[in-house]
Image 1 (cartoon, rainbow, N blue to C red):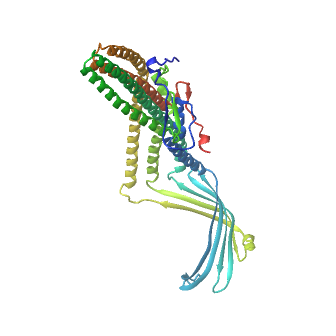
Image 2 (cartoon, helix red, strand yellow; image 1 turned 45 degrees about the horizontal axis):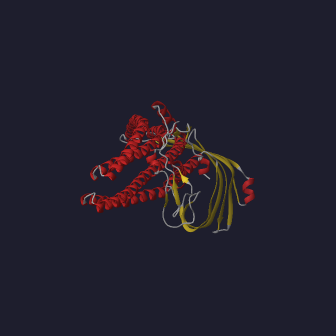
Image 3 (tube, helix red, strand yellow; image 1 turned 120 degrees about the vertical axis):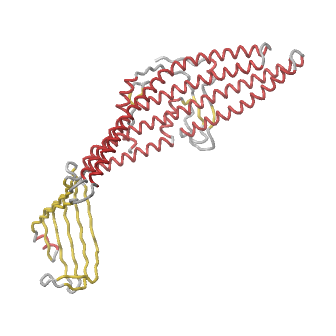
Length: 499
């Protein structure tokens, strides 16, 4: 990897010592912050970076909740102090006669259950124990217990939609997508920080040139005053030089404000403490990196969130079709419970008289006439699924084209930096020669201003091209989650984020 030294005309641009804002005790380490340091600070301390971390953490806990659904759950439920003193309608078991009687009782029950969702079938299995107590206060004071020491129950939908099966397919992909998206978002933070960094570099270069131009204008004006007193130049040229001093003074003020604004934006974005002294080390060298489109595409498809998101959207579309089909036509559910139970007037006796308990049931719902509602929902889901898959194919084509454009632009950017660097050298040298000739009176103010403008434009173009190079490079990094300078994948220690 080759690097190009910064040229003499641009050497003065590297480095700055400026403040960010009002007071706070904490300060950033007072050393020269490179572009890489600015990227690191932005990812660690920027508000945008913290927002992305919180977004990832919400996805992490959502995934944890998903996994918890497939693990046994221990639940204690109770219904206590159910006091009932009212008049109720009762029917005689022997005669069938109905009459209103006073009810004066209290019920209490408690149940402890271990439940397990069965992903393969979509059912729920539970192992439980329960105890009920009934206290009757009128017409006689009695107490009875109903105990179920152990019973096993199972609930299952037949031919229905199995959400557990689909969740096991989609939720792990969603979590992997969230991790990749977080890395991409951090790369977006890096790209934004790089843009702020080079915006400041451009503003700082403009301020340095404006300061140098103002000093030169003042020097030439002082020389012209002496020559005017000696009668070697006319008043018209003296006024032109005075006007140049005034214009350069305004330009200096404007560029100083622009530089200060750019620095404040950078400091704010990287989370710099208020009143912290920031030192920026601006390097104008760029590495030689040549990218192969097919290799970049392969890395982008393997590492980035794009293709993973494509897969997730396709599965979600298929899930909608499966759900519409499952909800069409006859639906059935089965429930079964097996165990031991007993009842008695005392707690101990309720366990001594245990009997077998078997409860099995089947529930059916059969639509006789739904006017094509179920069929219509299936057709709609299939049409939406086909539309989604078509859109995903188009997105893949657009993704490839966009990546090809990015790679082409990046490969061209290095030569743009080289050309603009040489143009900046020539423009600076031409300006220095013209400045000498202007002092000797051999060129006009108009010509001098034009040469200065050409010099400024060339230097601005050079710095802009360097900024574009790094912006393009970090864009490629975001698309591939690969660092081409170190030759390694970009990874994050997610375990530390979850602490």
